Amino acid sequence: MPRVLLLLVPVLLLSACDVPAYDYYVDAKPIIDANCVTCHQDGNIGPFALTTYDEVKTVAELLPPSIEADTMPPWGANPECNDYLHDSSLTAQDKEILLTWLDQGVAPGDPTTAVKADEVEPMTFDLTLPLPEPYTPNGQLDDYRCILVDWPLEEAKYAVGFGVTPDRTDLVHHVVAYIADPSIKDALEELDASDPGLGYSCFGAPTPQDTPGVIGLGVDQRWLGQWAPGPTGRPFPPGTGILIEPGSTMIVQMHYNTATADPSPDQSSFEVQLADEVDKPATVIPFLDFGWALGSVPMTIPAGAADAVITHEQDISNSTLDWFAGTIGLENGDPFVVQEVFFHMHTLGAAGRLDHKRVANPTSDDQCLLDLPRWDFNWQNSYQLQEPRRVDPGDTLQIECRFDNSDGGSEVGFGDGTFDEMCLAILYVTGI
Ligand code: HEC
Image (cartoon, rainbow, N blue to C red):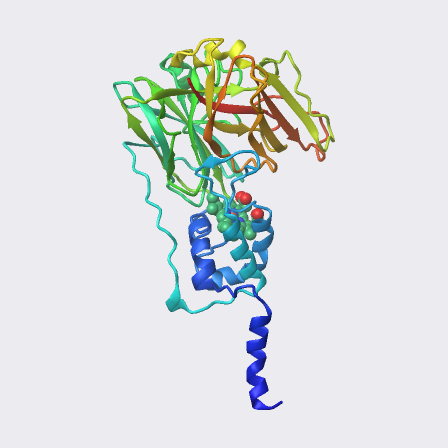
């Protein structure tokens, strides 16, 4: 071929395709740094590191399926249902860039042109509370441990943000903290004493269902906040906060996972942002069929069922609102506002959904509040609605839980053990 033609070939090839040629340092690295490396670095819970070109290249073939299916970064909410604050999923544009770059053969580019990811300001907190002493996970792949921490403040304050500083980042998979009222302090101490070592074993709920002297979630113990690897913490929905009385006890549920590290002592801390006053005091309302928890209504997942669907629809303003939200001044018959939704099932959970039905006001549309098309027990987020949703008396909420028990030889019902299931939404609500 004449020399001039040889020179033309690459030019023709380039102009033939209008997809931009992406490279690592300019295009892929800033996206990976901002969205993946908090977990995918040595000493953290991601199963491999993604901090350098060589590390990414080694696992490049593994990445597209998780990016395409939106399973990484772990977020979970279907974007067609609603919009949320602090959404950690990849934007459509970032997805397109990463997938194209991976498909084009992971060109490195020039390290001197490297683009830095936007720095995220770490949150600051007013109070840091470490676990009272180090705890060593029990050696199972997953250890769920509830550890009691005394609330040290002598006057009532609102919690307006929650975070965790994990000590062993390679072991701490997630943390949920609950506030327990002073009235159940003794009962909790007995529970703690009944299980050797620091804290007690707890899988689904902060206290086992039949703990003497304890009523349960939403009444004498309330959800405060949850944390999973990623950002250090999150503020609660703007203008809202949860009152914490002096003499309260924090029940800190630690989930340790030993997939990437051997059990060794961990003394993580949790952190709270505080305020003397808030515009709208908030509280949490568990939404489920209480008959399931009381045993009067069966929640049955048949043996071998591949897609067992459990639903419950209720107007809570008409029934249990005063019971759960009396502390923030709500009475039955009042409207209320759902600010944030946290969903809970166990390991047979496959998908979950919560809808608001505008029965009382047919001129306004029904609204999907949360849709989790692929439930993952390991990644339980709370989802803050970008537009908090007002629920009027007469309206209903409807929860739907889908379970896959196709490998299970026995029927499964409602309970808080490892072999039981749950189906509930935990609503963070305020008055209007
Ligand atoms: C919040 C922590 C976290 C973030 C952020 C994160 N990962 Fe992961 N990733 C994990 C953990 C932990 C696993 C192990 C499996 C599991 O627990 O889901 C994992 C597993 C994977 C896997 C193996 C396949 C699988 O689904 O098990 C791939 C591929 C992956 N991550 C890619 C990514 C990419 C690409 C990003 C960024 C776009 C990312 N991850 C962001 C924590 C994270």
